[in-house]
Image (cartoon, rainbow, N blue to C red):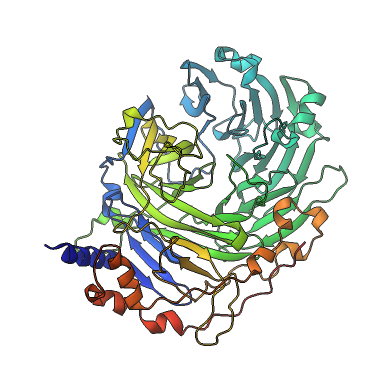
Length: 615
């Protein structure tokens, strides 16, 4: 087969696998095949079907697994909301069910010394280190009791951690209850060299059923003393509480990096923002409230902040990811305009003749983790033996964010809970053998001194995970999509001109953009539907009551730029084939049929809400 014929066959097959429906929603359907190659995402509404092989138990050649311990963690029919493990690079902590109840195994990773932390009420509901380099560890049990250890107090002699490192126990109950309990430390924004860590690093948020509270642990350590057991009812200072935060169970919560705003989501389908006030008489103030998934239970929220190297010119909490129905439906939001930028859903394999009954019958149940640089979104299906890696693109100045690719990795066991510990670029000259590579801290210059680009560089992602029958350390080799040598399409925002009206469209309309120096491959003028509330948070509040994230100006988003040329179907095929050295005569008819001029030019965009005023 000639090079031209091979190119035609490959491009035709690619178009068959990924169905595009260009219109107001720009719908894209992707059916994965378990072959570990990245699939480029162009759509605003993306349906991702797992492969039939996702239930087979065949491991991937691009995933190296090292067993930490063998144990039965198999869950019941429910979805475990909290974390079952935590890591900070120095220590690894994970839950175990012992003979006399639940315990927390603590491992110092350098020395491999181990300890057991005991004395919990019922099961362990959530566990978390304060931040990536902190040795402050918090555990929340089934009684809603909070335990905080400072492992710096015992150095590497962690056998003494149970008694000597315990900073405080805040007791709510001596009996387990049926409520859901979650915890979340205030995230720490990376400080410049010589700057001291902010006091908010000792602020923690807790949820118990339908209520939430924020604790200033720094103040509590001073007033209560070290190692003390303190009844929750005795606390008055250093506590902010919101009773009846939601009508139904709270599933996830997080604090803004400045500690001024608490965000919560729950089974009632709402996302709420609360202003944190430490005055005893202050009434809780809800800053913003809306239903991101049209009333469906919201199970997670992730703010897309870079916690490795924060750009001081970029507002934190600029973009938000929410998950509904056990994270099978996820949405990306702009927190300035409160527009939904993208929706992607996870589905079983499509039912076809000859399909495996088990693969198509099992409904997904997704657990999700965003790496600390906010470049990669990892998702594991607790009902299938599969891990997904998605690239996350962000352009704060243009108000755009989206996932741009998805890769499916087959596993030998389902993942129940996991944490991404690090990722690092793989040198182009490396053989790719995992034994020769240590996925240490990310070097922004890359392994060869060239600037690191998460959308271009092959990386090794390191994670620790609890599976049904073992706890593993995994190294996943991730390769960005590369179609015939064409780098991944950058999905960004531009001001464009509608060829029908010749009037500039609103700058919030998203469209795929070409890599630098290339002609546009596909450009779509139809924006996603407006699903968020028309009045953003900033309309009802003064800038003094807002965190830095919500005081962002939208002036950059409204700036006009030169309108790019719309690509015809011939341009689309010719752009790809020209990279292969092929002529326009090699244009594939199927591409022309799929991307009709009518779809690209004749849609009339819906009206957009008034942008939020600059604060």
